Amino acid sequence: MNWLEAVILALIEGLTEFLPVSSTGHMILGSAAMGVENDDFTKLFMIMIQLGAILAVFVLYFKRFFQSIQFYLKLIVAFIPAAVFGVLLSDYIDRLLESPMAVAVSLLAGGIILLFVDRWFNKPRIHEMDEMTYWDALKVGFFQCIAMIPGVSRSGASIVGGMSQKMSRKLAAEFSFFLALPTMLGATAKKTLDYFEKNDALSGEQINLLVIGNVVAFIVAIIAIRGFIGFLNKHGFKLFGWYRIILGGLILILLLSGYQLTIL
Image (cartoon, rainbow, N blue to C red; front, side, top):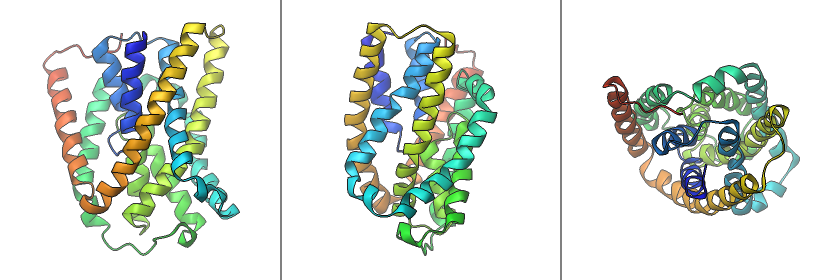
C-alpha cells in the first residue's frame, strides 16, 4: 500500500462510516479496484483508521459524553452482542472481507430495506437517550451484529434497529454514532493483537500510513456526520437505499459477467 492508496481508503472510511452505505464494503471495493494487496497490514489499516472516524464523534458530541453514568451503561449493554459474536465469528468474518460478491449482495439487500424503513417506523415515541431502556439498547446491539457481514453497514443496521424500538431518526442515528466508539475500539484492539501475533513490529512507513489514514478519516468524518444528520431529518433513507441498490446491482452484474473484481 502506498500513501495515495492510504489516503483514498481513508477518504472512503471517513465519508461512509456513519452513513448507512457500509464503510467496510466500500473500502473492500476500493482496495479491490486499486489492486491493493490483501495482506495483514491492509486488513489492519482498514480497521485502525476507524479510530480517526470515531474521534470525530467524540469531538462533535463532546458534552454528551459527560451527562450521566446511564449513558455509558446503555452503550456497554448495546456493545455486548458485538463483542460476543465478533469473537465467535472472527475467522468467518475475515473470509467475507475478501468477497466483493458478499458486499454486492449485502448492498443490494440493504438498499431495498432502506427504501421502506421510513414507512415501517414512522411513529417514534423515544426522542432522548434518557427515555431509552436497557432492553432497547440491547436490541439495537443485536441489530448491529448483522453488520458483521461486509456491505450491510454498521450504522445502517443500528439505526434501523433503533427505529424499530420507536426511536426518532435523529436519536437512532446519534446512538449509532455513540455505539461506534466501543464497537470500533474493541474491533481495533482485537485486530491489533491478531496482527502482532503473526507479524513483527510495524515499520516506520506503515506507521506513517496509519497516521495519514486516521487524520484524513477524522477530517472527512466530521464533515460527513454534520451533513448526514441534517439530510436524514429532512429526507430520510430513500436516497441511500437507491444508491445501495444501484451500486450493489452494478457490482453484481460485473461479477456475474466475469469481471475479476477480486482482492489480490
